[in-house]
Length: 115
Image (cartoon, rainbow, N blue to C red; front, side, top):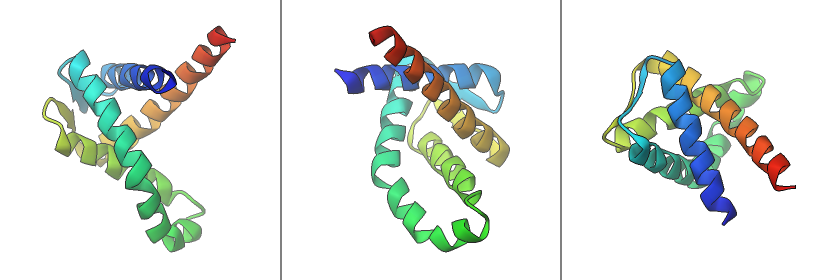
């Protein structure tokens, strides 16, 4: 049950980010759910491998390269899903940061309501 709520909160985060950042376009709520699901799968299976492979450059940049990596994975999600578009690196960077922040805040609110 918890992962369903997390999926719904992440979909809401994607929709809110698309409303705030103009280079991000989501065609509907179903697409936002699909984006949340695919982004979750990518972050679960692909991101740890890429973080490990890019560890030297992340070390040199004091961890800031992880933002670039997150932007790439956000953009990759847009390539995989029709109806979800991310235009340019700045759009992907801002989108990945904003979705993370919104998701974190919504998750905190949900945990506060649940307790």
